[in-house]
Image (cartoon, rainbow, N blue to C red; front, side, top):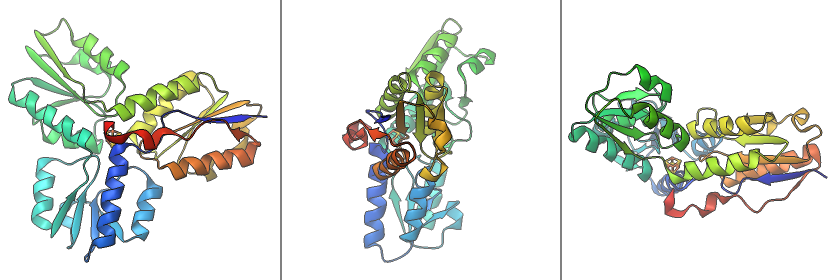
Amino acid sequence: MPTIEVAREAGACYGVNRALELVRKAAAQAEGPIHTLGPLIHNPTVVESLAQGGVTVAGAPDEFLGGTLVLRTHGVTPDEEARAREAADSVLDATCPFVVRAHRAAETLTREGYQVLVFGEAGHPEVLGTLGHAPGATVVERPEDADALELGRKVGVVVQTTQSRARLAELVRRLLGRTDEVRVMDTICEATSERQAAAAELSARVDAMVVIGGRMSANTRRLAEICAGACARTHHIETPDELDPAWFAGAEAIGVTAGASTPQEQIDEVVAAIGRLTGATCASAPAAGEKDGARG
Ligand code: SF4
């Protein structure tokens, strides 16, 4: 009989659980409306359930119409935060502490005169927020993009929390020897690196792999890339109704992992749905989203 195994580290991380707890508590206590500045996390199912509880999404601080404004896990620029504090009756800061660490690193490098490179996805909200803390910084999306850069004497690198360390090492390799100093602020969060390592390990020994999480979620997309590198039958889904029985034809071992913005109940729903489609039983212990604690 086929088996389903959930990666030993998968699903909602410390920063996402913390943000959800802050917002749900505020929604239960608030007298006025609550808005999040952009989606709280990159998970449409969770954002929809928050909306049903009265927590709606505002596109910009200027759209704010009163009540409480929540700064989301990905963080904001100093300018956006100032505008939010000016416009809102109150501001609830749900920025993940590991994103705040990246902001502080960007500020330090800027203050100390480094040419700052932000290694991450151009246009991603977290990267936009970090750029706001390092005026003049350059975004580097792929290690090979660094080859075309004109480097000064001191180069500082700050990293989007969801990058892989292997890609960071490749970027650093391409910078060394072209400048007097390369200073790397390793702001990759442990939740990300642990989920990537567990996904790589699991996807290398299963016949089919399912990755759960929002399509806008950078860390989920990275997990899907890593799994696809080891298991050709890798599929990225947001909800169980996207599952296709054909994906599992002949599969004896089915792996499941989930991005850091995927709550445990969504993982459980997908595992149950795969079981119904294939007759497979779940062989793994509960996923590790609950074990993160403050490590992120
Ligand atoms: S993935 Fe890391 S940085 Fe992002 S919210 Fe979770 S703990 Fe924070």
